[in-house]
Length: 190
Ligand code: ADP
Image 1 (cartoon, helix red, strand yellow):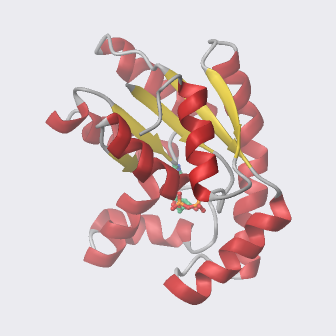
Image 2 (cartoon, helix red, strand yellow):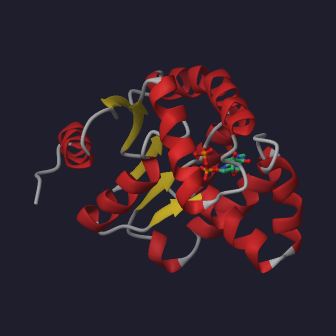
Protein backbone atom coordinates (compact mmCIF):
# COMPACT_ATOMS: atom_id res chain seq x y z
CA UNK A 1 0.00 0.00 0.00
CA UNK A 2 1.15 3.53 -0.75
CA UNK A 3 -0.18 5.95 1.77
CA UNK A 4 0.14 9.50 3.02
CA UNK A 5 -0.70 10.56 6.55
CA UNK A 6 -1.11 14.23 7.30
CA UNK A 7 -2.44 16.28 10.17
CA UNK A 8 -1.45 19.06 12.54
CA UNK A 9 1.74 18.87 14.63
CA UNK A 10 0.98 16.82 17.71
CA UNK A 11 -1.94 14.91 16.17
CA UNK A 12 -0.09 11.65 16.72
CA UNK A 13 1.02 11.03 13.13
CA UNK A 14 4.39 9.60 14.11
CA UNK A 15 2.90 7.18 16.64
CA UNK A 16 0.17 6.04 14.28
CA UNK A 17 2.51 5.84 11.28
CA UNK A 18 4.79 3.46 13.19
CA UNK A 19 1.84 1.24 14.08
CA UNK A 20 0.35 1.23 10.60
CA UNK A 21 3.74 0.52 9.05
CA UNK A 22 4.06 -2.67 11.10
CA UNK A 23 0.50 -3.73 10.34
CA UNK A 24 0.86 -3.03 6.60
CA UNK A 25 4.49 -4.13 6.36
CA UNK A 26 5.72 -0.98 4.64
CA UNK A 27 8.36 1.54 5.76
CA UNK A 28 7.14 4.66 7.58
CA UNK A 29 9.00 7.59 6.10
CA UNK A 30 8.94 10.77 8.17
CA UNK A 31 10.57 13.84 6.62
CA UNK A 32 10.75 15.49 10.05
CA UNK A 33 12.66 12.48 11.40
CA UNK A 34 14.99 12.40 8.42
CA UNK A 35 15.75 16.10 8.93
CA UNK A 36 16.36 15.61 12.67
CA UNK A 37 18.78 12.80 11.80
CA UNK A 38 20.63 15.08 9.37
CA UNK A 39 20.77 17.82 12.01
CA UNK A 40 22.20 15.49 14.65
CA UNK A 41 24.83 14.19 12.21
CA UNK A 42 25.73 17.78 11.35
CA UNK A 43 25.40 17.27 7.57
CA UNK A 44 25.06 20.10 5.06
CA UNK A 45 21.38 19.25 4.59
CA UNK A 46 20.95 19.24 8.37
CA UNK A 47 22.49 22.67 8.73
CA UNK A 48 20.22 24.04 6.02
CA UNK A 49 17.09 22.40 7.46
CA UNK A 50 17.80 23.45 11.04
CA UNK A 51 17.38 27.15 10.38
CA UNK A 52 13.84 26.54 9.08
CA UNK A 53 12.87 23.91 11.63
CA UNK A 54 13.92 26.02 14.61
CA UNK A 55 11.66 28.80 13.37
CA UNK A 56 8.69 26.46 12.75
CA UNK A 57 8.90 27.15 9.01
CA UNK A 58 8.94 24.72 6.11
CA UNK A 59 12.18 23.62 4.54
CA UNK A 60 12.08 24.76 0.86
CA UNK A 61 10.08 22.47 -1.46
CA UNK A 62 12.93 21.67 -3.83
CA UNK A 63 15.09 20.44 -0.94
CA UNK A 64 12.36 18.20 0.49
CA UNK A 65 11.19 16.95 -2.91
CA UNK A 66 14.64 15.78 -3.92
CA UNK A 67 15.20 14.10 -0.58
CA UNK A 68 11.89 12.21 -0.70
CA UNK A 69 12.30 11.15 -4.34
CA UNK A 70 15.64 9.64 -3.36
CA UNK A 71 14.18 7.88 -0.35
CA UNK A 72 11.28 6.40 -2.36
CA UNK A 73 13.76 4.99 -4.87
CA UNK A 74 15.31 2.81 -2.18
CA UNK A 75 14.49 -0.92 -2.36
CA UNK A 76 12.40 -1.10 0.83
CA UNK A 77 9.89 1.40 -0.57
CA UNK A 78 9.24 -0.65 -3.70
CA UNK A 79 6.42 -2.67 -2.17
CA UNK A 80 4.77 0.37 -0.62
CA UNK A 81 5.33 3.14 1.89
CA UNK A 82 3.66 5.35 4.41
CA UNK A 83 4.68 8.99 4.19
CA UNK A 84 4.37 11.04 7.37
CA UNK A 85 4.91 14.79 7.10
CA UNK A 86 5.18 14.88 3.32
CA UNK A 87 3.73 16.38 1.19
CA UNK A 88 2.85 19.57 3.07
CA UNK A 89 2.32 22.00 0.21
CA UNK A 90 0.54 21.66 -3.12
CA UNK A 91 3.90 22.03 -4.88
CA UNK A 92 5.15 19.02 -2.89
CA UNK A 93 1.93 17.11 -3.63
CA UNK A 94 2.37 17.79 -7.34
CA UNK A 95 6.03 16.80 -7.28
CA UNK A 96 5.16 13.53 -5.55
CA UNK A 97 2.35 12.91 -8.03
CA UNK A 98 4.89 13.27 -10.87
CA UNK A 99 7.43 10.93 -9.25
CA UNK A 100 4.76 8.27 -8.66
CA UNK A 101 3.26 8.63 -12.15
CA UNK A 102 6.71 8.19 -13.63
CA UNK A 103 7.09 4.92 -11.72
CA UNK A 104 3.47 3.83 -12.38
CA UNK A 105 2.94 3.49 -8.63
CA UNK A 106 -0.10 5.64 -7.74
CA UNK A 107 -1.20 6.39 -4.19
CA UNK A 108 -3.86 4.22 -2.58
CA UNK A 109 -5.06 6.69 0.03
CA UNK A 110 -4.32 9.95 1.80
CA UNK A 111 -5.49 10.14 5.39
CA UNK A 112 -5.90 13.35 7.32
CA UNK A 113 -5.77 12.94 11.09
CA UNK A 114 -7.88 15.74 12.53
CA UNK A 115 -7.33 17.19 15.99
CA UNK A 116 -8.36 20.05 18.22
CA UNK A 117 -5.72 22.81 18.08
CA UNK A 118 -5.59 23.60 21.81
CA UNK A 119 -5.42 19.90 22.70
CA UNK A 120 -2.45 19.32 20.41
CA UNK A 121 -0.63 22.44 21.62
CA UNK A 122 -0.92 21.06 25.17
CA UNK A 123 0.32 17.63 24.00
CA UNK A 124 3.35 19.19 22.33
CA UNK A 125 4.22 21.27 25.39
CA UNK A 126 4.10 18.09 27.44
CA UNK A 127 6.31 16.30 24.88
CA UNK A 128 8.77 19.21 25.05
CA UNK A 129 9.45 18.35 28.67
CA UNK A 130 10.13 14.70 27.78
CA UNK A 131 11.95 14.78 24.43
CA UNK A 132 13.39 18.27 24.50
CA UNK A 133 12.85 18.88 20.79
CA UNK A 134 14.26 22.28 19.78
CA UNK A 135 11.05 23.24 17.94
CA UNK A 136 8.69 22.38 20.81
CA UNK A 137 8.62 25.78 22.49
CA UNK A 138 5.24 27.50 22.69
CA UNK A 139 5.91 30.28 20.14
CA UNK A 140 7.39 27.80 17.64
CA UNK A 141 4.53 25.33 18.23
CA UNK A 142 2.00 28.13 17.54
CA UNK A 143 3.90 29.05 14.40
CA UNK A 144 3.88 25.42 13.20
CA UNK A 145 0.11 25.25 13.80
CA UNK A 146 -0.41 28.43 11.80
CA UNK A 147 1.78 27.22 8.92
CA UNK A 148 -0.04 23.88 8.97
CA UNK A 149 -3.51 25.46 8.90
CA UNK A 150 -2.49 27.55 5.90
CA UNK A 151 -1.28 24.56 3.89
CA UNK A 152 -3.80 21.92 4.97
CA UNK A 153 -6.66 23.31 2.89
CA UNK A 154 -4.62 23.04 -0.28
CA UNK A 155 -3.64 19.44 0.50
CA UNK A 156 -7.22 18.51 1.34
CA UNK A 157 -8.46 19.98 -1.96
CA UNK A 158 -5.65 18.39 -3.95
CA UNK A 159 -6.37 14.87 -2.74
CA UNK A 160 -10.16 15.19 -2.46
CA UNK A 161 -10.20 16.16 -6.15
CA UNK A 162 -8.40 12.88 -6.87
CA UNK A 163 -10.77 10.81 -4.75
CA UNK A 164 -8.01 9.84 -2.32
CA UNK A 165 -8.83 11.81 0.84
CA UNK A 166 -10.09 10.12 4.01
CA UNK A 167 -10.45 11.89 7.36
CA UNK A 168 -9.97 10.28 10.74
CA UNK A 169 -10.57 11.80 14.16
CA UNK A 170 -7.22 11.80 16.00
CA UNK A 171 -8.65 12.57 19.43
CA UNK A 172 -8.93 9.67 21.89
CA UNK A 173 -6.85 6.69 22.96
CA UNK A 174 -3.94 5.62 20.74
CA UNK A 175 -5.52 2.19 20.10
CA UNK A 176 -8.87 3.75 19.27
CA UNK A 177 -7.27 6.03 16.69
CA UNK A 178 -5.32 3.12 15.17
CA UNK A 179 -8.60 1.21 14.86
CA UNK A 180 -10.21 4.17 13.09
CA UNK A 181 -7.29 4.47 10.69
CA UNK A 182 -7.38 0.77 9.77
CA UNK A 183 -11.14 0.98 9.27
CA UNK A 184 -10.72 4.03 7.02
CA UNK A 185 -8.20 2.07 4.98
CA UNK A 186 -10.39 -1.02 4.84
CA UNK A 187 -7.76 -3.11 6.63
CA UNK A 188 -8.73 -5.67 9.30
CA UNK A 189 -7.30 -5.10 12.80
CA UNK A 190 -4.78 -7.46 14.44
P1 ADP B 1 5.59 18.62 13.13
O1 ADP B 1 4.92 17.78 14.15
O2 ADP B 1 5.87 19.99 13.60
O3 ADP B 1 4.90 18.62 11.82
P2 ADP B 1 7.78 17.08 11.97
O4 ADP B 1 8.72 16.23 12.74
O5 ADP B 1 6.89 16.38 11.02
O6 ADP B 1 6.99 17.92 13.04
O7 ADP B 1 8.63 18.21 11.18
C1 ADP B 1 9.49 19.07 11.86
C2 ADP B 1 9.98 20.18 10.93
O8 ADP B 1 10.68 19.60 9.81
C3 ADP B 1 8.89 21.04 10.28
O9 ADP B 1 8.45 22.09 11.12
C4 ADP B 1 9.65 21.56 9.05
O10 ADP B 1 10.55 22.61 9.36
C5 ADP B 1 10.47 20.38 8.62
N1 ADP B 1 9.73 19.55 7.63
C6 ADP B 1 9.33 18.26 7.81
N2 ADP B 1 8.67 17.82 6.71
C7 ADP B 1 8.66 18.85 5.83
C8 ADP B 1 8.13 19.03 4.53
N3 ADP B 1 7.46 18.06 3.90
N4 ADP B 1 8.29 20.22 3.93
C9 ADP B 1 8.96 21.21 4.52
N5 ADP B 1 9.48 21.12 5.75
C10 ADP B 1 9.34 19.96 6.41
